Picture 1 (cartoon, rainbow, N blue to C red):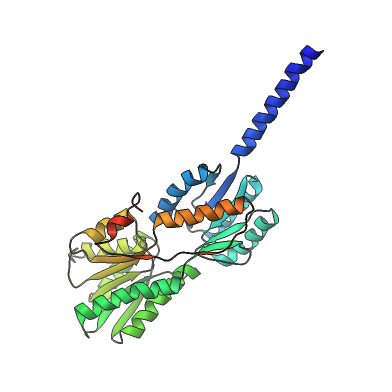
Picture 2 (picture 1 turned 90 degrees about the vertical axis):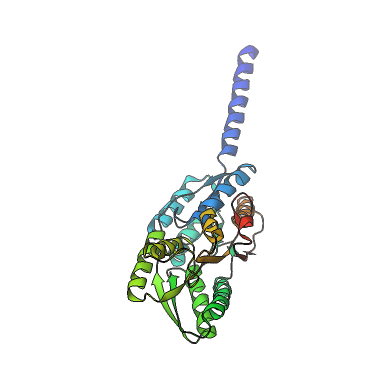
Length: 314
């Protein structure tokens, strides 16, 4: 009998060890961005995955393609699966996430906001979007006064007012320009993607070909606007044109560094900093540790400072 029981016991122990190992491997955290077309977000995810894996957590992400219903549906699926220990996300629509955030809380899964906070979140990585918008506008105003003096200036402001982050950035830019330049005419051009930025700029140039300053709350739509200007015959180093954005990727940095580029500067968050803060918040949430808001501010990107912002250098 002993000879029979020993192998059975060993098998049971081995099975329990395997089960324990499988359970350990099932630990996961989830990162939810609005879509996969924003390269900064992709850069962040690439850097978060190995950092989380080193701590024993698999990073789950998705591509809701800026569809609110899809983002909510994916979160519900993550909650139901049971392996996700914490969720962090940028809300396509904050109000729409309140019910599913409550579901996560009831399931013992902390929800952490990315650049936004709403009812039910345990903590958030936050910026100061209106002030960030004002800051980039200050550099634009300085350039305009230096290069256009007191002449009237027409500004194309690429905008998005569907969520608090982008709306407040746009408001900050608009307020700072209006307060600093009494002779500025601002046209808000709704756009999120590169394609939308291209189309908005083409329409603006048709209606107001004297538009010489182009500002954006983001960088993907500004790259679209840049191509629209070049396609319309404007030189990529035209000294009368000023373009600036919030956020950068390696592609933006290459454009900013091009000699005399009309894409003159950006006000950007380092992807490595954002990835580090996100990782720390997700790990704390997954481990049941205390959570508190973390604030991050962007840095000025110019042709002289661009090298330090390349992914791999930052």
